[in-house]
Image 1 (cartoon, rainbow, N blue to C red):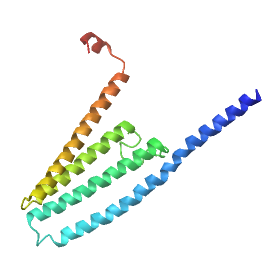
Image 2: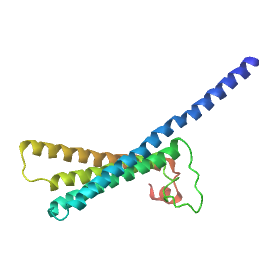
Image 3: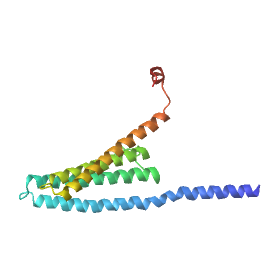
Length: 188
């Protein structure tokens, strides 16, 4: 009896330690928050470079500069999604007061939705990068052609991966839902 009680206490202690170990992830999310500052510095540098050169730049140069700003903004948005939803899914729920101006999606994104949002953001970032490369094309050398080919292939892989992930999540969630009367009578 004493041995059984001892083993139960060991089990409870081990489970508490495992549960508390989730806090080891917190520094990762704080590190990502600091990386937002680094991204902001780069954004401000690009914005000032674009503003200073606006009068002497070609339309193509301005568009390329704007695409860089869009790319940096999408990356920052991706970081926010990862920080907030990752912290809430894996570390601890954030305290939200009802009058808070928090984003509507906070507290509602599970791991599956996080993966989809991340992959969607990566596809958007990849598309912007690809557009920037095509816009900056002046002459096509064999090396440049090969580089562009790989950029397109990588982008297509991202797109296909996101579609397959969305499809697999939809299939998985479809199996979790009980069949309704309508779906049974339609044979679905």
